[in-house]
Image 1 (tube, rainbow, N blue to C red):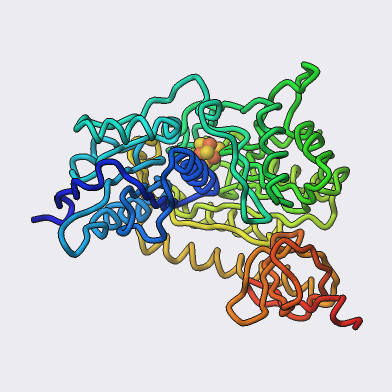
Image 2 (cartoon, helix red, strand yellow; image 1 turned 180 degrees about the horizontal axis):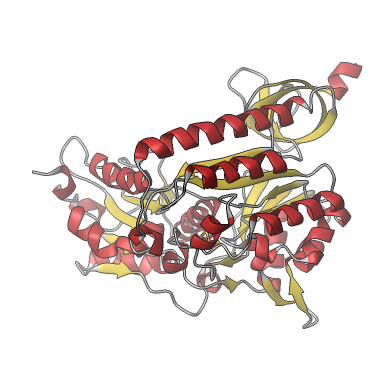
Length: 454
Ligand code: SF4
């Protein structure tokens, strides 16, 4: 018997425990948290390991080919030694894009639910119990957020908050407009209320999320039209909220107000993730990015004028169909001009159903390998230089988690660098001033100022 066709243990028809495994972006992590909270309100309890749970939700990402393969291999691994398996739900963007393909390739999947429909999971679980097909990949006009229970108390000092979903940009390589649908902004009051609930529950830093987060628009509580800068200003009034971040942004939605906000709102952290993807205008046009290399550079310049110490991060795709050596050199050039603090870079991978997947002149794998290695060498050098420049400075970090060694804690600097300190007297959630004493490529080591002065 194929492991993907293993029978489900009948005892799991009404699941009492669940496990959510989220892949991909922060929005998926946020969605996974909301699913877990919702199942908690249904009386279900979380299980640490997938195969131990009665219900396993694989909250998938469709951006990279390997991520899809990983989902199928995870489904196979959920079969227990005795041949039984948990109830399996595939959620997220793979579910949305490949619902019928999933059922064909892995017939032991009980539930397929898209990212705009997961608030109906309890109903889908009931359907499985009745032996009915449980597939929901609708993109309902009514927001799922209104149907989800209120946020439950977080144990962490940092939290994600999705403020908008979907994308109207239709970059030719990207599946998001098809899997997440059109841009929909959550209401001002829903966001402010959720932020307050997260802060009441202990969050001190909130990262606002959206596929195109800076495209958020809405009316404030007095009916005035606002953009994301107005929303950030409102959230900054929450007394115990100390840090605000946002991701991911599109260059075309960097409004004057949002750029100015970086120089005016202390709680808005000096970090901007602003993908450019490539440095050549012909490639940017073929990607349907609707900005040029120059217009991107002008935005970076204005953001740096507003907030000189801002750290810039980005995304790059090498080997987009038709990219010549000379066009790739333009990408290296823009990287040298921007000087990034950190970046994500990938080889182009065709996503079924996107225009770029059908373009001529797909680039050979070995050419992409070589370009990616060259790009990453420059990006790694820039990241190391950015980190090294903080050595000798005193900065405030928010402690987020324990380190590997006893007494070690790891926090984040305002520039999103991980900082390791040995400070057994401190706790997760503390803000602490540290002297940065050394820098590695991916993290910094710090000494607490208080301990040094003692
Ligand atoms: S702007 Fe981002 S989410 Fe939207 S289509 Fe382009 S890459 Fe995808």
